[in-house]
Length: 105
Image (tube, rainbow, N blue to C red):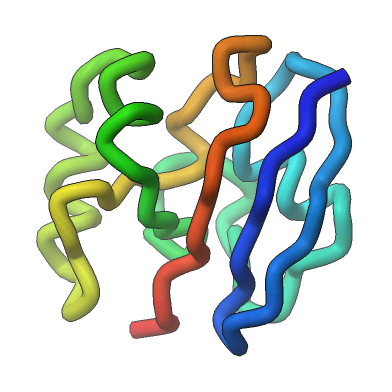
């Protein structure tokens, strides 16, 4: 098991305990944080699973793909740590990661 600290759009934090498989989007959705989140179901086509990760977590991930980059460019809330949760593999390396769900566009 791994634990993620997820801050929702209202600023409330949640300790999300999950197995290190699938994607970050699936872990957040399966926990129940679904209000306007991950509307395309993880197909990298809507950017509703936009999250902000800190630099330490970003260094553990592969670079942003062109498709992901294009979707993030359409967000008014893009930051240096922006990623689409559907494109972040959930591995043991993400244990104790802080994840902030970006405001809805």
